[in-house]
View (tube, rainbow, N blue to C red):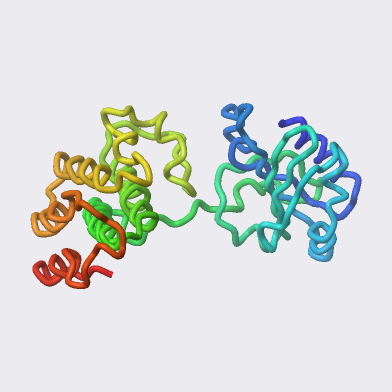
Length: 275
């Protein structure tokens, strides 16, 4: 897979309008973690006038191997599958555009002699949450559970699953990053869920119980609430509000939930905004 980038670089070096090829992700600075499940992420830096040509035609991409499938997934680039099974995602930028991008862990595969030597350092990691504190992530997780359980009561199970088994779990991971003694040295600044299984054992982060699937939102919420209460000082008002929504109703279909449902009752009783 790394040879594919080298082959692309060799072709770009002959074109005259390309400045550099940067590998990213597992094709970047941490390419030792590249495996058979990886794809190739890369940026091509080109002269200003050349960018439209690289976007409109993929003749340069086909040089090392035929392209079996591709589509424009962004105004700056495409995703593509080579005929031999290598999957790539790339973007085309000018030097000025590159300097304004948030990216991290890049590796210069090739650069033209007159291109800046520090291209890999042009990018900056993305900014973290506005409030990257234990208080913020803890209360976001709790209110994600609360809103998610109301979605479940309404019969919006998919939306509920996203709040309970995705958004709240994201906040749990953020809490671990802030409070765990173990440094997650390969944390992905763009996608915090990457490689968490290698960073935290199931007894620390019980993902199988927190993310049990579409039909198990209440069970997931119960596990995550208990996890939060065991480790942090949880406000009893929101914790009790979540707990009151946990018992399984006999019929959770939308038609079975009366207008004066437990959602409305809980909202009025606790003074908490539902949706």
